[in-house]
Length: 277
Image 1: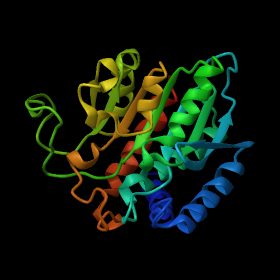
Image 2: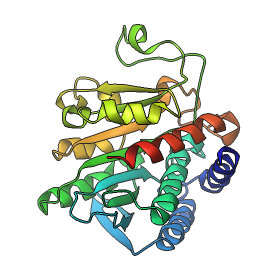
Image 3: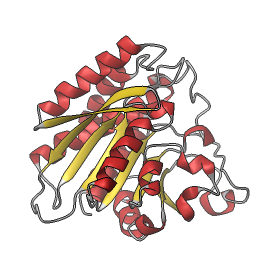
Image 4: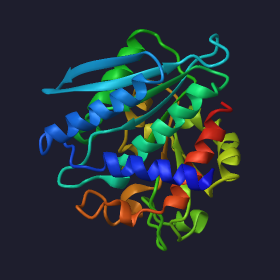
């Protein structure tokens, strides 16, 4: 399974890691959107959530899988498919998209206990515009969620690891060889069990943050933060982005820099861990 999983993830990385910024390469963004649309639509009814905010327009793609018990509140798992300016964005965030599609493929065949909403977010690079639009609409509709999970850069490892707050290396270590779960206070209650399940497959470390992470702005830089602000329990799964990856938002963010065995282990861990929530 490991070699097959790596091969599938590699194929998706190669497909989606192309210039796809809304202003720099809108045609690339449209092509990636269409590819994801086709892949998700093959697994079930697909919703196109169109939004316009602060002069920006985009499309979130939402696949709702029923789960075995429709009475349970849904788990929302998302990854942004737009890319950075002047970068192919392999880790950021073709890795998140590839993982999202792998989870969708598996859960469509073998549904977990609760309903799953899989969302490909647009316009993250413009300030989480797509996720903010969806979070706002869900809150206004009174929609409950078990948890929102943002998949944000999942495939890079390094001999060195930086942190947003001095002294964290004493707790988390100096090597960038782990996946991090960054959660607000409510979601923090789910961290021990999720970390244990994922930790069977990949080193997993947790960071609960109070007050929506406002004291540590670096932990807010993905699609989970609008859900924090809307009052939802949410977490980010990440390889820690620019705290580890020197290719962040550079033309050098390519598949050759990534750690595919690590990425496959992250994917396996998320499948096992998130499926148990």
